[in-house]
Each structure stands twice: as C-alpha cells, then as structure tokens.
Image 1 (tube, rainbow, N blue to C red):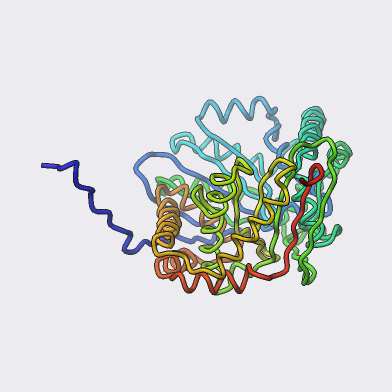
Image 2: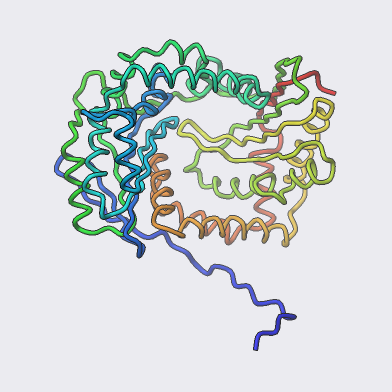
Length: 431
C-alpha cells in the first residue's frame, strides 16, 4: 500500500540518446531525413534552406516574401490555399532566421496527397499577389513602428551596433520605411535566388509509411531547383570585428518611464569544447525562474518583473545576453547587481544543491526533446542549421551530468568575469 507520508524515490536519467534518422538522397540530389516514430497517423514535413535574412542584401523584402508565399500559388488564391490547409487539418509556417529559412508543415497522413501537392506548389510557384503584398506591408510597418518605441528593442539594437558596428549584417535593423518601400519584383527575385536556387535539406517525422515517403519524394523532385542560377544567394558569413573593451552606451528615450537593459558578452562558438559548460553556467546565472539573477533582482529587490541570461549561438559566434526592463530609478542598481552576480559566479563555488538543481533543469529539457518525433525533428533541424552532428546531443547530456562546482567557477571566470562586453541602456535618465 502506498504511504503518502513517505517521499517517493526520484531516480535521475541514467542515459538518453537521440534516435537516428534514415537518410535518403533523392534523384535530384536533395537529402531526405526520415524519423518513423509515434502511433498517431500524423506527420511533420520540414524544408530547410541554407540561407536567411542576413544573407540577402535586403532583409525586409525577404521577410515579406516568406509571409506572402501562402497568399496564392499556381491558380489558387490565398483564401483557397488557406481553405485547403484548414479542410485537411494541416498547419503551415515559413520562418526566416539569420542564415536559414524553414518551411514547416504539420498534417494528417491520410490527406498527404492533396496537402503535399499544395506545399510543392507553394514552394515552386507562389504568385505573390500585389493586394496582399500591400496589406502585409502596411501591417508589418505598423508593427515595426510600435516595436521601435520599446526600450528593450532600442537596447538590443544599441548593443548590436556597438558590438558589431552599424554596417555589420548582425547589427542591421529593418525599419518601417524599408518595409513600405518593398516592391513585388524584388520579392519575386529573392524567391528565385534563394528558395529555387538552393537544394534544401528535408525532414519527415511522425508515423512514416513507404507511401508517405513516396509522396514526399515525388513532390520534392517536381520542384525546379537550379543551383546553377547565376543570381543564386546562399549562406555568407561576415566575421564580427574584434571587440576588446567594456563599454556602456545609453540611448535617451525621454518619454519612457522604463529602461531597457541589455548586457552582451562575446563568447565562444558552439563547436568549442567548453560551450556546453558555459551554457550550464549561464543557465545558473539567469536561465530559469529560480536563477541567481531572478532571485536577487526580482524576488529580493523587486527591481524588475523579469530578467534572463541566455547563451545565444550564431554561425558568426555566440554571445551571452542578459536582458530586462526596469523603472528608470533602478537602472544603475540593476546593472550593478547583474555584474555582482556575474562576479560571484566566478569567485564562489556553487553549492552542490544548486548545481544539482541546474543539472536537473538542463537534463529534463534534453529529455523533453525526446517527447515526440516532432520535437526531435526540430532539434535536428537546428543542429543541421549550425552544422552540428547528432553527437552534440550526447555531449550536452554528458556535460550536464558530470559538471562540478569547480568547473562552473572556472568557466565563469574564463568567459564571463572581466571579459569584453557592452552594457546598452535605452530609456529615461537613469536614477
């Protein structure tokens, strides 16, 4: 009989592994990665191109191009495209990131014939109608105008421009004026130069049958990908300039009662052997609700509603980013407490209890990736985007399982304490 007065034994994860995808090279050279897992007859199709927003000369029309692709294709209007997806219980999204573009389709297997054919047409022959383009331009420009008024947005932009230089692709910002100036001809050209001039990597996950693989292969082979196009745009990396100082920058926003705070510290690339240990340290600093920054600055002192620290990777190099918003009166105090916590990470060993708490959070997150074939596929898509192998998952688990307080302090001292950084403040006059 269960005795509810006795706490049950909690067992940690002994070992977890990422399941292997089956790799197939289609007749047209496209790599199809398949994961057959799950009991429900549903699937996720992900099409990943090796180019994104900062690979093109004009990110505003590229972002609009991705939004417009479902507004009509072939002989179908945007409404008819939406009707086909909704009627067949499908969901489609096209998302551009820095150096990749991802089309994601969630669908029912028994409607794959119709839905996958539609996706093929969306990729191969979007119509980019002028009326939806003008409507989306106005809406996107209005949203961007509102975003630029936020202290957090301005602090982010200020940090990037200080760290990379205003002309670097990583510091480039889309303005409302950029959006309103987009012409249809530019959108059409970008579609041809990126999506039709680069063969994507394709992921198919869920309950995958031979019939579904055949439907997928036929759809992909019917799309006229042409990598010999002289106007082809592919991934291009621009290394950031060397940054060797600790700078504080402030942008005045006289009407704002809040200040956006963003501290950005250049860090090691994702393939570096210390990367996972640094991720652990940054998580302890500000990567969960009970982290040091949240406990000190939100819970104990009440300076902000929320604060976070993240290790953000990019192909040009990673950055530790600490961000929050606070009342102007508390700006200096918040910045001082952030640096105090960073210094404490390097000067004082974490307790075993705190180390185990962070360890469990990270390992639970890794285990959560295995919850469904779709989450596994999402992880693999990100790995391919960064040029990582499936072994990266095992390295994350091993590092989280074995890291010690001594290692955390060493990593914090090496990569956070006294290193070059930018403290960007955007808002009213600091108190």
